[in-house]
Length: 440
Image 1 (cartoon, rainbow, N blue to C red):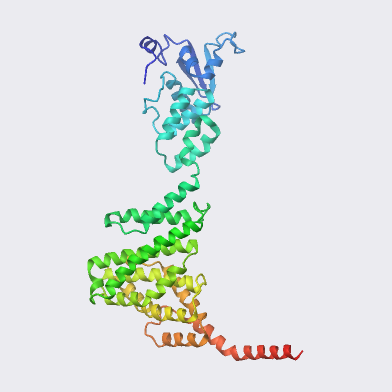
Image 2 (image 1 turned 180 degrees about the vertical axis):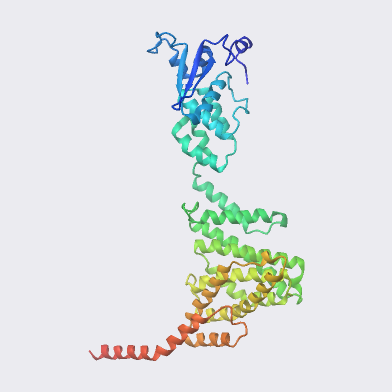
């Protein structure tokens, strides 16, 4: 910051009545009336409002004392900002002083007054400060309310809030996707989780439209990244399947396998949003037998049980795609996926519940209650879409099983009973209608 000159600095000090030639009266509707003893050469040089008021051309300039006292009307909540602005007029602001503003709110208040009174140097300094510092959410909301009304001079402040062009969005999405589906060192897991969370947010439609509308190229990139993830998972699965009976219980295998399952659960969310679940569902169907056998190899340690839980999370998303027609599979495959995962889920849930109640690390094993309920509903939907004979097979096995409490297939049983009872009558009615139609 440069001073205005040593002599001028000594001669012009705000509040110095001995050298002051003009009084600025700050007045509010509430009756506040404060006098600031100022110097016309400072006010005129740095502020258009005072330059106009103290000009020979101002209509009341000839009235006695009108040039010695200038009224400035303001609201009470802006009073301090006016005082601060007048003090700042005594400093030639060239951007080299950064500690004049005392925070975003104060700078924003001064900026409003500077725009109102026409103080270009202070406007420029406020804009430079606000454009450079971070904002809290409440401050950002206030900036959005105030700054757009100030025109081009304040436009740089809003640069960080402007919509990003589609090309930049695609680039950051693809980069984040590749990292989110990679297998970085453990110390980067938190960063990868953050990338996964933001990718999902970018595709989510909430109060605002999704940040990215996926085209065929984006979908292809997602498929390729997920396929690479599935390939690494499959390599790990094959190694475990062909290994010793306790291979899953080894610490390194546990962490790696759990990481893959966690990533696959997230990948299902992305694939579902983009409506490209088919390849994933087909892979999971083909690998289900092997996955269940590997999971059954491990002991009943908390870590192994957590892996089983992660596998159920992925399976629930796959079954949901099958059960609600997002991915169409033939009857034989739908029946097979039930025969593999129903017994596994049935036995595993009581085990998870037991460990959750007694384990110090219970929070690690918590699966959202809505997830269990959704999985149960999905099982029912898949069963009810099978031929009645296959339904009877599944329901018989359920009724004979000691773990029949979950999943509760009562709804499927009731629907099967009703359909079976009325089936002959319904079919006979259809046959009668068909015979009548042919007779005409």
